[in-house]
Length: 190
Image 1 (cartoon, rainbow, N blue to C red):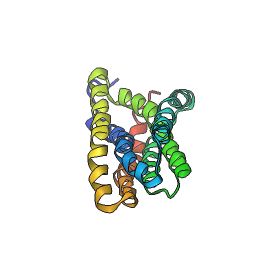
Image 2 (image 1 turned 120 degrees about the vertical axis):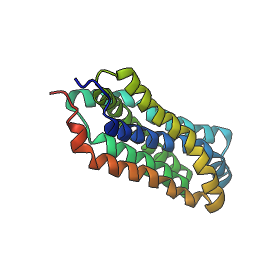
Image 3 (image 1 turned 45 degrees about the vertical axis):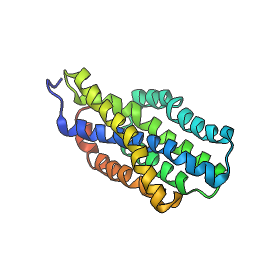
Image 4 (image 1 turned 90 degrees about the vertical axis):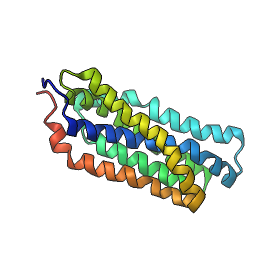
C-alpha cells in the first residue's frame, strides 16, 4: 500500500465527483423554468426531484455490488458522461415525460459513478484514507454548489435549450477519466 495520496489520480476522481454532482445540483435550478414551460403542478415538479433522487441513490448499492464482484472501472467515465448528458438533455426536452426519463438517466449515471469512484479514492489514498475521502468528497460538494450557480444564468440568457451546455464540463471530465483509465487501473489491488 502506498504511504501517500496520488494527487493526479485523486484530482481526476474528485473532478468526476464534481461533474456528477454538478449535474445533480443543476436540477433544482432548472426546475422553476420547467415548471413554467410545462405548467407543472407542485406534485409534478416534486416528481422530477423524486425521479432524480431515487435513481441517483436507491440504485447505487446495485452498482456497488457489481463493482465489488466484477470491477467496473469503465463506470467512472461512463457515469460522468451519462449524468451530464442526461441533465443537459432534460433541460432541452420538449415534453414532461421525456424530462422524467432523462432525469432518471442522469441519476443512473451518478449512481454508477459514486461506488466505483469511492472505491478508487480509497485505492489511491494509500494509508491516508480519511484525507483521501475528504478530498474526494470536496469535489462532489463543490459540484453540487456550482451546478445551480452555472445553470441559472445560463438558462436565463439562453433559455432551457441553452441547458445543453451543462453537458460540456461533464463530457470534458469524462474524457479525462477515460484517458486516465489505464493509470487508475494500476491502483487496483492484485
